[in-house]
Length: 96
Image (tube, rainbow, N blue to C red; front, side):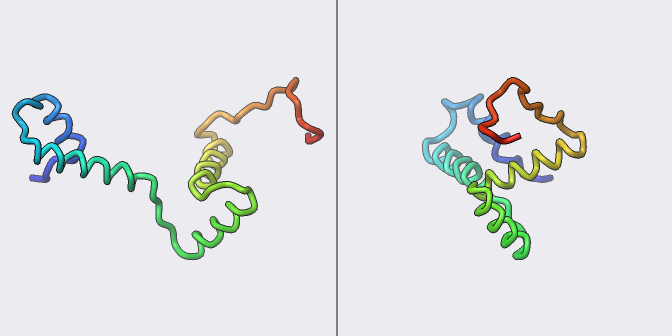
């Protein structure tokens, strides 16, 4: 039998909040905070990290924003997402 995940434990505690000790609640909340804090981290191979760092610099974006951009572009090009349509009447600032 596998132990329940953090979300399941938190839901269970929420259902019986009066029965849980303060110390147990603190432990569970700290675990949840740690998982949330680490949820954004995606590790890549060294060569991918280097290319990602270079691209992020070129695009003047953060690493995470660059990853979001790459994933969105890939999903649009492979028809997993609808292509983001440009407003034809919008201002282009001299760029087409």
